[in-house]
Length: 432
Image (cartoon, rainbow, N blue to C red):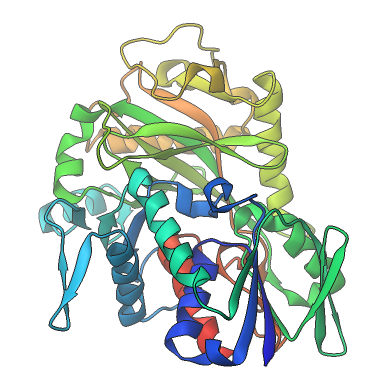
């Protein structure tokens, strides 16, 4: 019987386990799933703990070409586990209360953005909500853990993995175990483990020159009500005057701004619950930075900028600034009409111009001023910017380099979403 180790319990590993269960390969395997949390309640779940937007799209979520059938199967899997969909007579029927939309289905709206230089991203969205998503992952865990060939190992600390004579050694604290195959599914937060593997096998890297830096933007719902009503999630890109491309990400109508904690720094994020609503909308505005040689550490660069913002904030906090002050490179000392949804213990009022490179600041301002021509009120003086938000692409790795080491999901550099990471796991399950 083949012994398989899965490192991390998040979207990618859920997709992998789902795949081997559905294709029957699990019957010939013994699978250990390692997770840092002390139990399922304290596990991080990676990107699964934020918001729970899942979608079907060819234009977003990663660089893999994933057939629509696999995407839709993954979406239906999550919705069914969330008890928001049921399969009746071979077809799925969805809960009438689920927040769902097709972005830029309105041709006139699409043309309006297009004519201003934006690239509107089309996709079909379903919003589970952070509150329901936690219960959903718990149900998935319960289903997986009941299988006699699956064993969860919580409170783990994988120091390194080592490939030798076709066997894989996994170093967990003071224990060493050997496996026939290993699946690395540690998400963006597990970049240190992936880096160890790459250090030993530098030929794994296909590219490593990109990172997204930006802010979490918050404003009253009524300013973007039309956009929220028509598609719930709007995603757009714009090549700005600096030459940098800026995009929106993770729109949360009536949502909350949150912090995302890594091992030794914090960044900003956002989510929305299915029931407890606020009066503000938040979304990310991210600037894509693509570097050339000798640059080879996108995670290190994003980490450095994140830590710099924490240092200026006096510790594990993020910086909050009004748009007017951001544009004038002036420290915010007082907020106006927009009340922050982030707990005040997690931020200080400050100046993000002291954190970002100048071209990054200019790119964000150009993006927002252009967007204001379509959505008046985006650049109101008292709208809020939180920083920093960072999306690690990580090193894009050759996932087929070894036949028994699989790096999947966001930590592989190939995906950056719940849907695509889960699909990546399903695809790799069919290869093993």
